[in-house]
Image 1 (spheres, rainbow over the protein chains, first blue to last red):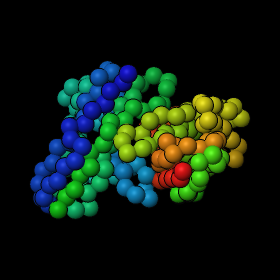
Image 2 (cartoon, chains in turn cyan, blue):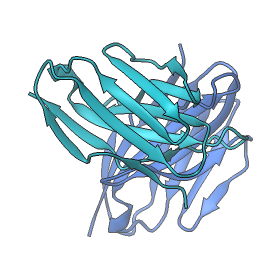
Image 3 (tube, chains in turn red, cyan):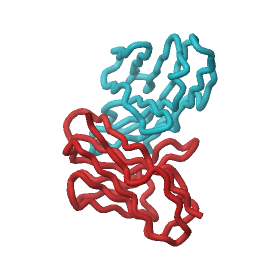
Image 4 (cartoon, each protein chain N blue to C red):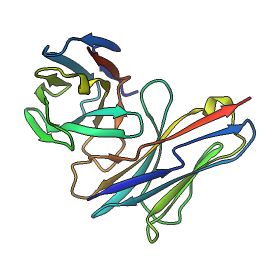
Length: 113
Length: 112
């Protein structure tokens, strides 16, 4: 079974803080993704990585950065958290073969006050 | 711009009813459409559809894709309270590194 874990289920941070969200997958997948999920908007792609040290912007990268130093770990960084970044953050991974199925972590509900 | 639209956004049904969820899309170089179920945790994969007219089935759930009219439906028959969830539709294209573009989701509530 593929397992994708995220470092926290719930997180509360103050405006202006630097926030790190960690994601680890145990299936040697090449591709990893960070989404945020907001009511009525579905999942929106923030960043993705197709290999170690490789990253690409998704649809809403502003205010975020990412790091992928090891294949199994993909970190999302909020350089200076703002209240409009309060959201559910979901990490996913995928093997780079022909199946497009992505495996999701349980999510981190981030509240920025 | 690529677009995925799900309808309805939410619905409430009684146990035993049949539910039909819709997903329409506009995407350049379409490759596949995927359905996920999300309860209060990680979305879990249901189906991936690539070819038109071929029904995928798993228990009481089934789905079909129409590549001419650019839509898919997800059917749930004999609904149970455990079917209460958000159902997500996503599409991917041939040139996207496997990125998924999601719709807003349909919230399904099944009442006893």
